[in-house]
Amino acid sequence: MALFVIRHQHPAERCPAKDPQMGQMLLNHLSESNAAAHGVSIQGEAVIDGQHTLFVIAQAEDRSRIDEFMKPFGMAGTVEVWPASSCAAVVERRGCSG
Picture 1 (spheres, rainbow, N blue to C red):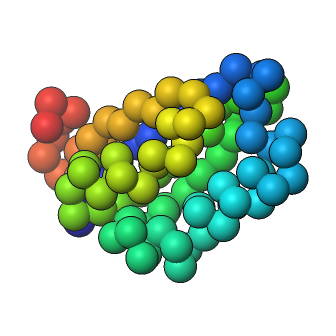
Picture 2 (picture 1 turned 90 degrees about the vertical axis):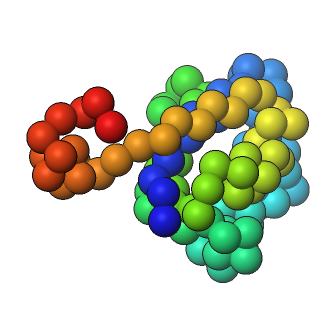
């Protein structure tokens, strides 16, 4: 499985957390069982306080699964996806160049 870092940002006025139904829908979407149903394994997620920015570290067979999984977040703002490596993998190959 490939590793990805994902950043979602949205303007304060479009914050999904302001709407209880939308906020709950996004929490359900990020659940372990729902992610697994999309072929995604979420390793961690966090929102930067006051910045309306969510970071997700996830694994999937390929980027297309990540792109499909993150579509609901694209309705509120931007979604950026980067291929990534664990620190152990970088040390093992002796560098960050990939």
